[in-house]
Amino acid sequence: MRLKYYIIAIMALALTACSDFLEPDSISTFDTNYVFSNVDDARKGVNAIYVQFGVDGFRSRLSNNMTGNTDIERQSGWTSSGDRYQIWDLNALSSNGDLRQFWNAAYTAIRDANIAIEGIEASAALNSSDVLISKTMYHLLGEAYTLRAYWYSMLTYHFGDVPNVRLAPKAGNDFFLGKEDRNVILSQVIEDMMSIEEKMLWAEELPYGIEQVNREFTLGLIARIALQRGGYYLTPALNMERTSDYQTYYQIAKEYTEKLINLKDRPLPEDFRQVFLNNAKFVTPVNDDILFEVPFAIGNGDVGWNIGVTVQGGATASHNYGSGNNYMAIPPSYYYSFDTLDTRRDVTCAYYIVNTDFQEEFVNGGISNISQGKWSRYYLDAGPGASSAKGTGINWPMLRYADVLLMHAEAENELNGPTAAALESMARVRRRAFDSALWDEKVDNYLASISTSKEDFFDAIVNERAWEFGGEMIRKYELIRWGIYSEKMAETVQTLKDMADSAFEGTGPYADLPDYIYWKRNESGRFTVLNPNRKIAAAPDDTWTRESWLLGLRNEVTIYQEWITKDWRNYIDQGPKPGVARYIFPIPEEAVTNSQGVLANDGYGF
Image 1 (spheres, one colour):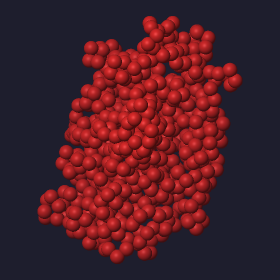
Image 2 (image 1 turned 30 degrees about the vertical axis):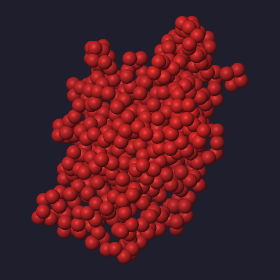
Image 3 (image 1 turned 90 degrees about the vertical axis):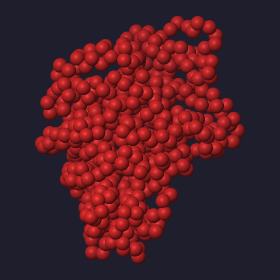
């Protein structure tokens, strides 16, 4: 069942459209006591919080566009001064429209969450003698707490210290709030969720399953934000630090991942590809890998338009699937970090496109344009129209059970080293990645090799999360909280240079990788590559097309392709402080102006 939050008639609630949170809209003539006096209207009131997932500030910005560049996803921000390019290049101005849209979406969602929280907490229905009514109201309260926590997590990742709005807008409130310490905010939202999660419902108990916030997602989000709170963050002085109580939050992450594992464990589905195909097939299984996914209605959502395998469409195309591109490419350094037998690689990374004849062919741009293969409008059961582009309706996964298992392994290792429990959580994720006949070597022996120290196991966690979540656009947040953002960017650039040199010189650590690849369409018309893993002298016959591969990393003018030397330069040594990636962005000037002098863009080298 698909929850079409964005076409629910919430106008009847008079929870009106968004404006800057410093100038909130009136909640009009409807009294919140009435709105939250019964389950049906309270449900609509909470639905209002979800609306911001359907605006550009989330659906095509925050979710899958604003989170490059990393060691596993990249885009060339230096080629334009446009809003998204400024963000990719870590040099966004306070006038940046994408940041303004995100800011307004976040604070509108927070406003609507505050309205719902105050309304439900004051409602007699919360403690109704009718057990079902009371349970439903408590669950709705948990949804509101959880959604508010998500938006504050994102705000603090992108802007650092931000205004902490925890009251619904009403006459007499102070609407001109200054910045609150990000650690205070994160601690509060963690405590909020901890106080309510036991009264929430599991996805299988809810009418819309994983298309609405559920208890398992809340448990997972507690752990995710606890790791954020216990991790490193950028201070206004441009230092990466973490607080002295960081282990307290690793303990929370450990406890709440274990709580979910103990209460609602589930096997990871064996077919890794199917997890993401389900998004395009509008299939939403409960007790599966995805715990919560944003439910885009048909005509909404940009998955398969600006992320995923490219489809060339338009009025002259022979197919009905429309057009979709990929804003974020995958660097070959990531592609070749996979074990060649890891089934996740060819799900995550694709170097083919679908042309106007609805045939698969080699990707434009070759080695510089490997795409995120987990999604595509190409995977839809029916084309949405030859001239369609945005609005595919493909849902966006927000948290998976595999993430819970790896967070558990990470937290356990941080507190106690690579214990048997930490090893088993990682093993569960790796087992799905390899054929069972390979488990002795690829799971058991591998885990034994990285279980000798806390440091080795942490490095393995960094790698495993890359292989598991490529293209899901959460890597940036991990590199930040681990305090290794700049370090990993420098490592990526060096690896790409070494690959380029090996291809041209025929020696070096990557000399065996393909300088050229050979491809064709097989008997079923699918794109297939003869030599994805190794260099070969030539194809066996002329049915194969040869394309430059790692040789494409160099040229005669700049030696290394400019995207290698420029995509990450502001993350490494050309930002305000060499060795520190200034991932924090300026508060939008609209918010600064409307704050009447309370907010300012100070610190962080602004």
